[in-house]
Image (cartoon, rainbow, N blue to C red; front, side):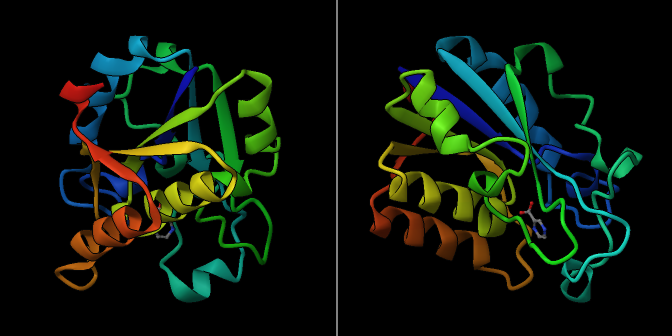
Length: 179
Ligand code: VGL
């Protein structure tokens, strides 16, 4: 069984957001189009309290119950079976969807007999990277949807480097057409 993980397609990571990945919202139509090919779809939300150590490293973003933390409206909410909330404490970064605090994501995927995980969303160089590496560690065959991710690129090649890192670790890079 196959699961689609949609990482952090939230306003603050899209055009106009405080931590925007260039063209972040462009992942949404790609994700909407392929969602029906999966047995189970989980979307993660970065969901920070107003004060957290995480904001020593980053400008405040995705604060709980704010517009910035809402899913971008280009993402079809009806495709989502479950939402994984992460970074909800005052010390955790919560980069990986496997650090969700409302349930154990690896357990949930196993309950749904998932063996293959496809990772999409934002940002390639942070939360997508951490989520894909954790999916491998948890024993899932892990695919990264290269046309359904966008990077923050604080340094110009960060997203490209992250892709190489994921591939080296054992992730399989595919496009949405190949699903
Ligand atoms: C993210 C930077 C800081 C992400 C979250 O969603 O990739 N990036 N917090």
